[in-house]
Image 1 (tube, rainbow, N blue to C red):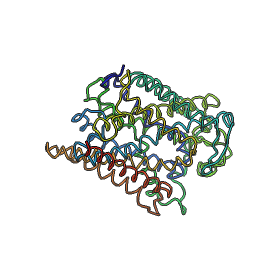
Image 2 (tube, helix red, strand yellow):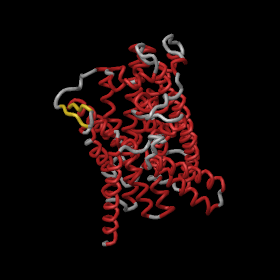
Image 3 (cartoon, rainbow, N blue to C red):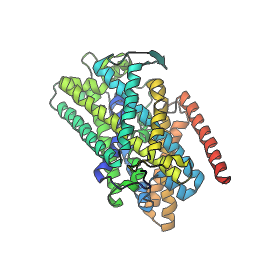
Length: 470
């Protein structure tokens, strides 16, 4: 028997776990070597992540204000819709949906990286081909698809089950991180001297220290996306909305802490045959096994096989919490849009466990194409996700200003205004190529973005036409 309403089954820790689990995904364990150190070095990454966390704390004021005013599933979509009307609501939701749904397959396909690092070619059987320089194997495709199906099923069991599973996974994730961190203090092979140089040496691809910091800062809407999933769960949270701001802030700070810790560990625990992290990260694409992932290599050096086990479990939990959390958030966004007649009513059908299951199935179906195109091609969607996150942050901040002006809330006008400005800056840095920053979208990402916008326009016009004909 189908139900008609969402159920309040999530505790404060469940919601915190869903938010934190979405913030800490595959990127925390893979990107220290492939992106963060390579763009800005150790100090540059630390400054960028802390600055980004501060900006997100400012933006969270707007979220805390808006969720008390509109405690409805849909979050940013609802805020933009109520403040600026139907068209702006759709634009916000369309970009936010892009942000959320891209992260699901990125986490699913990242599972293969763990298996490649720890078990070598165990899953490299069946058909084999290459897309954008990335080797795709049938066994690895099966693993990603199995994860997508499994966590769609977990989601179907109800938000309480999803919240409980997420909470357990987050505890395991954090336990692994703290074990590795504790090991660094007692390991004779790790020293602060190995964090030098603090920035990547300047060359044609790496500008000044400021440029390097900005190049990492620009991806932070993607890195911290997750705290903003909390409003999507407003109607299913079984606690006072007065707690929401604290839950958001602590998830942001915890995410910042883990990102920085894993990046510094990756730099300080490089293999013995490399004289500095600079040489190591340049050679990283050519390395195989554990040494091919900086955080895994460092964990192995610090605690040996036990360290590899701990970091593997943490990374695995991070990827699984990302899949589960964004299934939950994306399906609730689609449910809210359908309830507001912005997309077909099919998406708001609830199963017997009060889950918009058809929306979950849609997310799963779309994500299943990703394992067949490989991670390099999927990498083009990361910056697109950052742009989608920046658009939703901007709309929420501006909506807060809109309503705060009516109430003459000077504090919220200031916080919302600052959040809006930073969000627009993030978006512009991604969209406008600036040679000395080297942080804009890659060429394929521009084409994919234009396709997404085109599809959005067609879909919106078609829905409007359908509404008018009724």
